[in-house]
Image 1: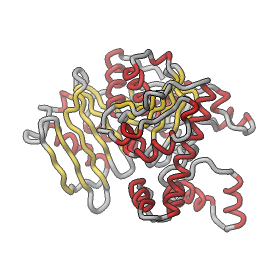
Image 2: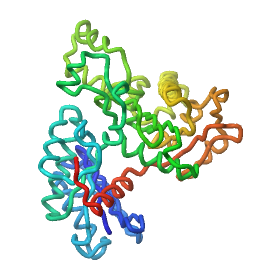
Image 3: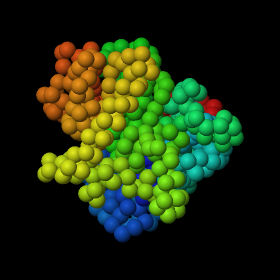
Image 4: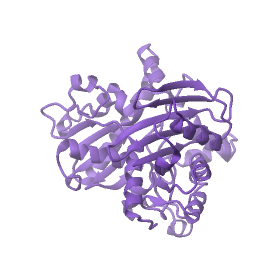
Length: 405
């Protein structure tokens, strides 16, 4: 059974075609800079076809048309026709409290996605555009939505409520929702397999570290707390997001610096984090690391703050769970930065968390353990694969025909 996974952003679409019976990737790619000059395609298949070229794609619908044409083309394709696509699984960021599991996409589900536009303005609108495009181009093919927030629906009230009047939760649903749920769920299941232990017996701190970063406490397979909040702005420092700050800073910026609410929003979301701290006009961790190695003191400070905030969350969640069996590093920085893993774990030996420096450096883009023999806690690198998880959940849903919200 073939399932096409679509991750539709504001100016890009990532896509992967899975043969779920064998868990094989048939084809994958990305179309970037959709609707602007320099729209670019990367595409590759299991049988060695590889394309990289500029393409004329002006909107989401034309991008989906191009993807389907590539998949069924005689030279580049891996299927004979769209009839071989059993389902399309879509990544959707925000489903609020109303959606707690993968769902078949209906008019009601679309309305829920729209309902959370204000809380995920950069994600939910393009996610819905991708859904609508696939429905038009693949009529009759089941469309399934997998929500980033769904895995965090198990977080208890004492962890998701803010210290605000309760009516703001009751009336406006202001609360912690959490994100990257599909990634956290995937890597925790992989961690249990690596440890040869049932997931329900494990306490795991999952660190999804990339341009957007979040830390999650997973106890017995359930998310019980997570660093991102009502929006992805809260939590640890990220590429351009400030993460946790004193809320009074916002009023200071408005009242003393003459900034508008829109300018403050832009500052906190797009000009802060590693970008703002390092001051090198790049939020890419690799660029900041290079600047640090060249002696840039601000770059070094930015990385120190980044690692320190991650360590604080690991410590907090270890105490919340009453212990920890494994710490998982995943996503772009988590998987590829030995420095961050080293600085996060440094000084934790007395807590049973001890890194092996050689294993930490000798990472070959596969699941591996990097703790030393003295470490009571497993320290794991697990490449995330949200697309695979979405395909698995879509397969489960269409085979069980479970459509409850």
